[in-house]
Amino acid sequence: MRLLIVGTLSGQVSTAAKIAIARGAKVSQVDSVERGMEALRGGKGADLVMVDVGLDVGALVDGLRAERIHVPVVACGIGTDSAAAVRAIKAGAKEYIPLPPEPELIAAVLAAVTEESSAIVFKDPAMADTLRLADRVAASDASILITGESGTGKELMARYIHAKSKRAGASIICVNCAAIPDNLLESELFGHEKGAFTGAVARRVGKFEEADGGTLFLDELGEMDLRLQAKLLRAIQERVIDRVGGTTPIKVDIRILASTNRDLEAEVRAGRFREDLYFRLNVVTLRLPPLRARPADIEVLADHFLRKYAEANGAEAREIAPEAKAMLRAHAWRGNVRELENTIHRAVLLSKGPTVGPEAIVLQGATRADDRPAPAAAYSGAPAAAQAAPGGPKPGLVGRTVEDVERELIIDTLNHCLGNRTHAANILGISIRTLRNKLKIYSDQGFAPPPPQGGEPRAAF
Image (cartoon, rainbow, N blue to C red; front, side, top):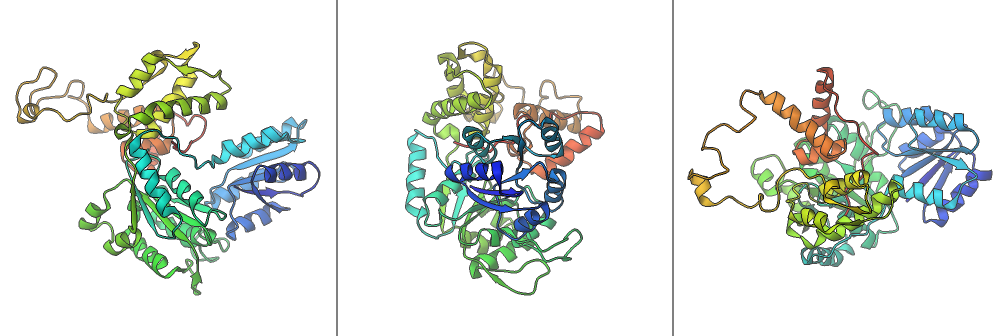
């Protein structure tokens, strides 16, 4: 993990840096907010920024937001200065670390904010087969395409491959291609020169340069615009990039991993994805099985998430009651591991007894039996007791507008995901940008969408 300290490296801040280094972090330091922004623009990168509350925390957070540099910020200062702590949190810092620092607190903040583990929890033979293939190809520099439904853990698999590769000592840089507007994604990937476009206040190094010597993971690559795909193809083939507004080609040494939940062969046939880029990326394909195809993993993952969120919420360590486990095994898990993670997180918050019982397991959607294909008679229009007549109205929907039903579906899904926009967008099958646009419309109409609860945790196994 890369930690950037913004402030004078002396006294208690120096002690915090030494603790972070002892915990495995790579620490760099600058003495001002301006130099901190320069370091992040310049491609040194950071997974976490720790800033002295004596500096202008608000200016740092606002600068990062304005230049679309996505990195969490924590503030640190003398423990007795509660007013400074409040100001830092209001300015946008995710956490406040009182000084003198406690080693366990530093470790907890590093783990909670960055969640850098590449360990994969599994038991099912289907997942074991996938990991054996990943282990065989990890040491090479071959491009790998990771496919699978939303929520199966494609980013975690990319981190696992990087950790097993000969580039493990360098960084893995992740870019969510679906979460960045098309007109900004080119700058995010390749960087830009000062004045290249409105808002380009200084030269900024892109993710390709930031990943130099390491691994670049392109998440949800199938969402990328065709025009940008052509530039990406050249960068992958030649290992040379051009910054937006730049005139000098820049060589990079990177390994490319990519993921998608789309059928890229179908996208190629439909003209939405370049065939040459598909074959360039598809040296090796790793297909992550959906959770319903790896039933032996449901219980071990549930236990893993139970321990994780009990610790995160300061709750007692509990076990899952046999009746609750039966509910988990019977569910279809169309949202895969991400849905299971949210379900267990919610169960930790709702559970009151010595065990997590069925009353704390809130499930939505089909059971495993409901998820099986219907018998042929049902498709042919033959009578079925629980089925409406072919072409007949669905109970509760007739008389309502499409807009009304869509709004209810989106808000219900957000509630199910504890307000997590990214997870909800994946379950709904829409981009995060589309979801945010719709939520703005709903807010303007007086329908308040549920706020995120406890951040936007990454899906994990």
